[in-house]
Amino acid sequence: MFGGIHASLFPDEARKHGGAHAVVTGDADHIWARVLSDCAAGALEPLYEGGRVAGTELVKPRWDLIDRNRYAWASVQTVRGCPKHCSFCSVWRTDGQEPRQLASDGVLEEIVELRRMGFRFMLLADDNFYPVTLQDLAQARRRRDPTRLGELEALRAERFELMERLALLPSDLCFYTQITMEAAEDPAFLQAMRKARIKGALVGIESVTPDGLKDVHKGFNLHGEALVTRLRQFRANGVHVLGSFIFGLPSDRPETFVATVEISQRAQIDFAQFVTLQRLPGTVDFDKWEPETAGQVEVNGVPVSRYWLIPASSARNVVVVHPVMSPEEIRRRTQWVWDQFYSLPTVWRRSRVMKGLCARLGFLLMSKLYRQMYANTGLAPASRRPIVGHDGWRTLCGGCSRPSRCRTWRFQKPPEMGHETSGSS
Image 1 (cartoon, rainbow, N blue to C red):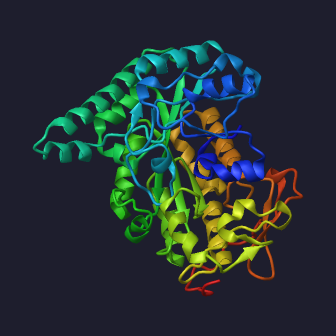
Image 2: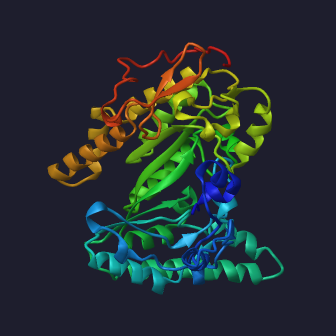
Image 3: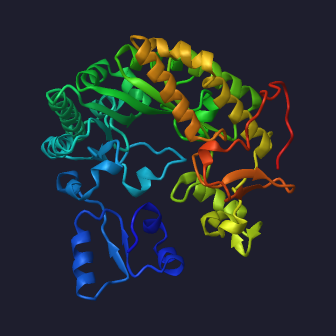
């Protein structure tokens, strides 16, 4: 039985290539019971459509079934869906743009159960913990019909109620979440996060240039000095930031990488990840890119737009043509940014946010571990390491069983940060 985002997008693939007897699309909260019943009766249907379940009807997971010793963190969802429309993200298409919030009673019940199991660190695994912005409220107030304003105010009130109740839980609990940068414009929300002991948040910064933000349909983000000021608001309110950046956008230029290092350091973000743009199924970027590659390049008879179907023995990372930089240059410059941000002196300076030597050393260790997760490639960890072939395509090596020890892309010096351009590839 297959389910999840990819199976929901390509149910036929799960049957053809995965040998699925049944595919469940959408939310499985309610339909899963029917799937199990049909399986027990030997009457599985090929396709079950779960649709989108309302927030008040989402089902609590069976946490009692997990092996506690195999998990360091717990994960609780408080809202499903995201009102944004970022071009690289499939969440708003698969989970919807209308936030579906769980009632605080259900969330607290899960957290209490997990705390009794021994978990102290919990991720509020939401698509966007801040689904209603001040700008959303301002726009709704300008409408003649007050219905939408009432809906948004109710959603916002529920967020504050949840955080007030989190603040009453045992003081040894720490929470982390994902959030948009707009939360920094909302002092009341940040203060509520602080009281609820939401210690950190992944913030999608994506790009430090206005053109880059347009590329990803994220014009609501800031850039330049305004970006620095806004990000510092998180630190001022006790929320540590894991900033997420994307390289390889059409508007990126060699100087973009230098600017990213400079701004990320001045903005006082604690951690950062620098990833290269990938067109994922279900996203606007993929829908635009797939027709552009139709009939152009195939690997073992499989179009590169279906790169996940290419056998591992001949798998190749998908390379998208960039206006002025080659894939190798983008990769190399991305590596340079990782090395600059996580250099030992730079991390030690950032550790001043912690109190005491032990805490600073812990910060240093966490930075090292997070950096090591990416195996000195600037890419997500995987057992297949990138190797550039003679034809310019980045092939994948599956022979490394210890990716954290891999030094294939260990560079001894940063690239020249001048006007190097090697054209498209």
